[in-house]
Image (cartoon, rainbow, N blue to C red; front, top):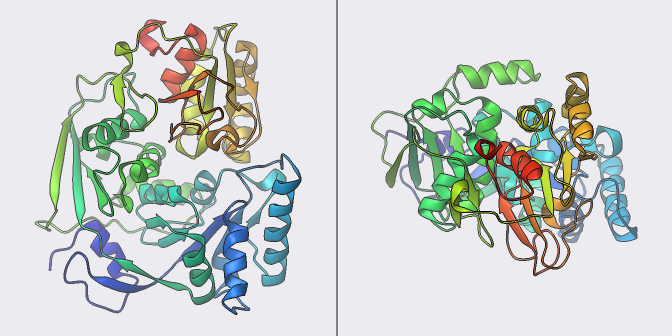
Length: 419
């Protein structure tokens, strides 16, 4: 049987022969992830099922990123639960404080996940690791508790939608625009419990950080996973980040896809997802003179060093509009330090930005950038549901760091061309 990338990855982790989509498998996991919101729920379930030891303390990752530094007593107590569990179980990969970063940037950066892995996490954006050729997916905290105890889980083999990007990527377009183009085309349920397999000449030339951005938002189309073949770019990224050596692999020729979606991006302009769905996508030029009060540059979608460089390119020598607060959150200490070394932090601060810690923060309406009644924000994050970043009457527009930074300067939703 010729296998899709999803089938090929899952086959590495099961003793059962995969023969068709929809097949139920028992799979060995490579790693299990939880954070400061979902971790305590998983720990409660872990203890409730009578488990006493995790299957492998080296392959459990607990990242305290959503409310770091802790914003109130409740969030501090959440961390206490996770910290005590990590200590009791001998979990070495526990991240809090100055070593902590946004989980889905931190783990690939530290070489903790890589090509061929099967990763399950108590966070829907665990699918990010498909950008480095892992089958990675989010699960509920009860399933994560079982995976922590057993080192295995069950999965249904997802059918695959192949997404091909062709043409020449315009100067002001980034990976964020590519994934918004797909979500805007197929809708937020267009890939429900399916794998999205990305390919084509544009993808072949796309840096790994861009692939991670696209895989991150696969869940916004309803997908179980967003997957990229392991190629020379993947192997280079893993080598540079302390990961293990990676041999190239891809889907088999003539494998069976549910369908194929083709895009030619040569004439595409920067895109924006308008309220209140990631699928409500418009060209930035179609949004005329819409004033904003906030811009957020960061998150597990676009908080990497390439994103910081893009934002700084726009903000260098310019000022944030006086009616806008622009919040920049490098997503890990490594990204923060590199931004400092390259002078990007100074560019941000000279422009009038607020530069904050490595936190999810405002993305989920947590802290450090909550929207008030009727306020609008342009954010490089991944969701813009009603009330996602604060007030139920606020609005969130999703875009690339280039568009977010340009909007911060213009005071309205705008692309780089407007400057």
